[in-house]
Length: 213
Image 1 (cartoon, rainbow, N blue to C red):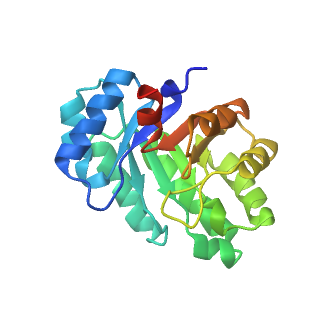
Image 2 (image 1 turned 120 degrees about the horizontal axis):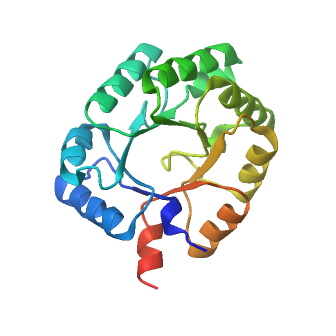
């Protein structure tokens, strides 16, 4: 099973330096990962550095999701202008807890409108959600025009689980794909997620585990 082509090779630590960012870009290009996922402040520099050899992914409203929609839209516009190919946005979890699902959907649609043909992945941070909330968000993401539903930021209290991937698979529609992120601790974890239908794997360590085997 080819795992590497499904990996969004990621470095989103607050202390990430340009040298570290360059290193993961070089690794991603060499190993042919799906993308490199880096902080917004590095997008322009990374885009110039990789010269189209790898897709550049960045994060919006990260990691808490409680920025205003206007700020997230501006962040997205700015990231795309700077050369981002893919956008991973965090939803407003407070709105979910307040039952304001219409606002969540409107926000995703607003960001997708700005993304245009660029891939949009919607991070729902499953570790904070009830089963009913997860099911509702699958429906919302499916209606929104987004390309992916993503489990986690990797900054929450938990990451991707088999149970959540199965729930996503049963509740998404309209060609929405799944990205598992956070807590992928082994190659066998990754293989299991891919067998369950996951299209992308967000990880800072998975590529290293595979290439060091």
